[in-house]
Amino acid sequence: MVILKTINLNKVYGKGENKVHALKNINIEVEKGEFLAIVGPSGSGKSTLLHLLGGLDKPTEGTVEIDGVDIYKLSEDKLAIYRRRNIGFVFQQYNLIPVLNVRENIEMPVRLDKKIPDKEYIDDLIEFLGLTERQNHLPNQLSGGQQQRVAIGRALAAKPSIILADEPTGNLDTKTTGEVMNLIKSSIKKYNQTLVLITHNENIAQSADRILSIVDGEIR
Ligand SMILES: Nc1ncnc2c1ncn2[C@@H]1O[C@H](COP(=O)(O)OP(=O)(O)OP(=O)(O)O)[C@@H](O)[C@H]1O
Image (cartoon, rainbow, N blue to C red; front, side, top):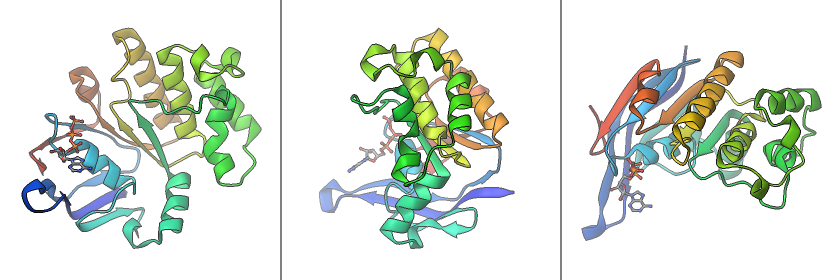
């Protein structure tokens, strides 16, 4: 079953001399439960594509459908709610809130949705991420790998069907990279999630179900 689909997706930044055609007629389909890796040179349009897939920016042309919903036809408010409930983002920068502890950071998207976090699920998630002993610590009391695990927990808190990750291990050493990738992969298995992940790491790309290569805004 196709969960994520783009039709003739185009993104142009700027105007006149500064115009950059960052994505050109991208047509992709991602199956539910699939792990798709996106690779390509710097500036080829990978992050732009991921942002458009996640409803974080508007395409110049074309559509993004998630579960049959044309997400850019939704109002801004509806799109924000849709994003919070259905998509988990993991970036290279952890973007944790410094004054909130591990547990509070993880629960944040659920609370933003004005819901009471499912205690049992969050407990399980924290355990699964190996953060039980650290749940009352603040981000600055954690290592880089631990902070990235919190960011993954936050991405998973609302039980999203899709995880979009932009170089999630870009700041981590080889060993921690392996650990973080194993966590992401076991989460998508456990919760039957779809993963689209940008990486420059050849090993990670090779471990995906499929690799999509982007060069100069086009699929190669
Ligand atoms: N907000 C923006 N305004 C203008 N141009 C932009 C903007 N964001 C990206 N671009 C341009 O669009 C092109 C694609 O950028 P994008 O960030 O998607 O590439 P990338 O493949 O993710 O690169 P990297 O691997 O270096 O992160 C680049 O030429 C970039 O300079």
